[in-house]
Length: 443
Image 1: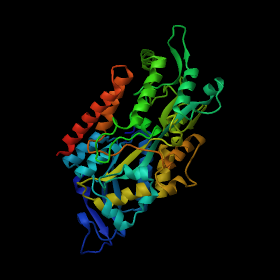
Image 2: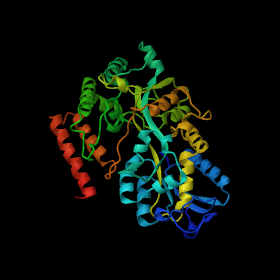
Image 3: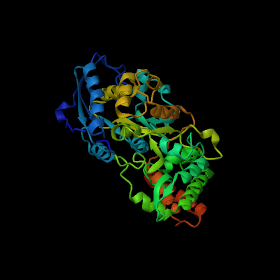
Image 4: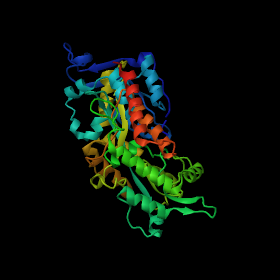
């Protein structure tokens, strides 16, 4: 969804001159004891954004270059995570890499593909408490902080205010039980019994319906302290799965499949929430930008996702993830890459400009409180969710998102009725996840 113009940096453009640096001793990894007083040189920056969003990134890069007139940032746009992995592994000219997935952190920190930023952070006195504990948790692995957060994605509930009002509702649901009750009343059918409009689609795999996005609604945990899978032993997952399966069964699995097959693509103007075919939907804060651009006349509001019925204290929280960036192990310009990384992730003006343009959530306390931050009523919901201490994320793993995918594949089978014994199935998934992790980490 986010891929830019591609500029290839020449091999000779890798020289970084650090004016004003003192000679002599250096810190770990050859890091200068003091930060340079003037930046000069060329740095290669790889990111995944494209089209309009790439222009937003470029505008902030332009600001960085304007503030540092002896610096040139060679931008490699449209580079997804797989391209970034291969480029770093092959020794390509990557100084700073920006990823759309926190799932690479475990592997990149563990393997050294991204450098340990700890020495830079300590030297420059970067205050990590400007980030929430959740955000800090997905930028490090096993005590190694090899990345910094570049805005966040936060998930909540979107609801069509016209459709809810027509059904007599004046407020969104706060529990999963209320969500199901309201959704069933909002669902309408054609003369042949097929679905005409759906109150809420409970199917796993529909748009942003993912196990990771549902976990915080019941406080579910993914991994034990020793890194082994917890999905089979944490009753919160069983609670969520049984609720979701019952919801699917009430409407009808085949009926939902038939309805979903005719819906528009998630990131098009035919998105089912934007067309009014679905009254309530789980989605990220970025949907506000799509609605403004594609369906500006849609009457809608946002709220936190409902919490599990026996976890009312979790209402107001939600799932948080985000873009992360790190310095490549093969960077020829690590000091300049760090300067750019620090600018993108800690400079309030840069963060606010990125947030206003991309409509992603800022990750620092100052940026969240900035008067320059453009906040609509709908967008404000997501600022509240990221500030909620009970919001959660998925923990980094050396196996990336493999443990999530294994569990979600199983959930797809379960919702279809192909799993006769949920407890036994979850126990088997625990073993699959643990076996896969063992292959990655070794004995």
